[in-house]
Image (cartoon, rainbow, N blue to C red; front, side, top):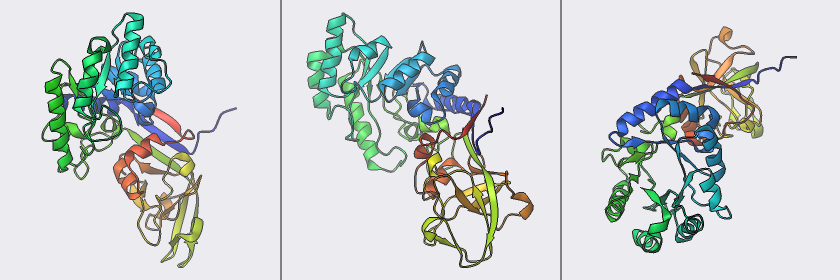
Length: 369
């Protein structure tokens, strides 16, 4: 018996992913370019994304967790793989060593654990040193803290990279960018033998070009716009389309969706789409009486989502579309070539990162090479 295809479909263009990597790598030159593949490659599937990025030329990869590193190692036996979250509490450092993973060490306690492993095994295992230059999240809290830690553990830790993370690189005018660039430059001067990595996706496009030796884009690889407010230089990678289930007409004054948040102001045709917040769509994607919402594309034309998104269903106002273009089974593009990812996210009150990484398991995934 044939298993029916789910009504929601994700089309993932791996050739666009590869093109985006090559474009970013060219822009990052003469520095090298890594690829961030955490969160199952931003939701598109690590098993497909990692080999495609390797084929495009990526040789260094970043993940978030130890488990992600183990999975990436199974797909990329020759790659350099860094674990951004460092030595996880309770994890055995030997597990990182066994899979040739490089934790981003961000505290004296982590550095001591990593150095103790070197003493126990007689091997200096590579790692990154993570300096916090303004995020207040992970990393050594200051250059002085890093200097003090390295004074006692430099010989054993095996560090081969110095890294930090931008707070607001997507906003070129944010004064914190200059502060972080200066702090990282000071750290590089203190450890001149270590290659440096500071630039994420948006930082690759900053006029200061704070790329150093290794850029590490993530979101831009997957089609997100690294230059908000300007034209997206990246190709779209992910297209989400959902089938129409039913069409109905409501009269002026009638409402739709939970809690009657949207009211028709004219005779209105509504198309109910077969996906909802259980599939990763934001509950606030639909317009209410107080604010606009996201738009979707049906037959290449935009139409607004209205009312609160339900667990499994979403409603679109298709009044302005020709009647013969909207019928059950027709597909609505949530985001893709017609509706940019960042546009759908902003109109839904969220960010593209959240949309990509929250795509649910009920979608059929179709890969284009």
